[in-house]
Every structure is written in structure tokens, then in C-alpha cells.
Length: 126
Image (cartoon, rainbow, N blue to C red; front, top):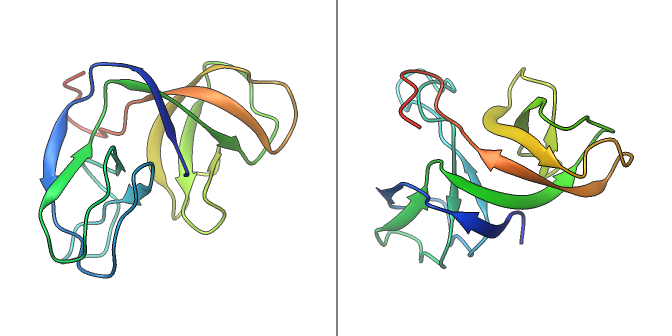
């Protein structure tokens, strides 16, 4: 599990995986198909398993989750999802915005922190 839901009121959108099954807790970096860019809604989190080519739902903000932080990041800093390491990072390049650390920051690299899932680049609706 990449992200563990703790509490909150997530907003969900329909999502159909096309490159394999998605497990509950998986973080999905969403890219605009035409340009393969990360823009708009940048990350979604599955709350339930979704079989390949079957429509399920992804949370696109509004929840508090736990995940591992790649670096020793402070509370309240904006973080992104590193899809290669499957961890939170402050590196924006090639990573999807995921939100802000809300607790546990500053405890060292590769530690579990809580974060507010706020992946919307524009417009902000949360």
C-alpha cells in the first residue's frame, strides 16, 4: 500500500486503468494523454481495488493519508509523488503534485508522514 487513508472527505472521479490492476492505496499519477504532461488533476488515490479495463474510482483530494517521505521534509511543505520510488518528495520535475505534509515531518528520510491530498494545480476547488 502506497498511501493509507486516515480521515477526511475525499472527492472521487471515475477511473479506468488500462495498464494493469490497481490496488487499494495505490497512488496514480494522472497525465494528460495528448501531451503526456502532468497538469490539472495530478494524482489520484485508489480506496478500493480496480481491475484492469474496469471503471472504479480515484480520490482526487480532500483526505488525510499516510505515506513514506523520500527526504527529511518539514511539516506543511508542498510535496509531489515520485512514481519511481513510490514516495513523497519535494522534487516537482516529472512528479505529480500530491499535497502538503501535515504531520511527522522532520523525522528523517524514509519515514511515514501524514499529508493532505490536494493534487489540483488549477483551479483549486478544495
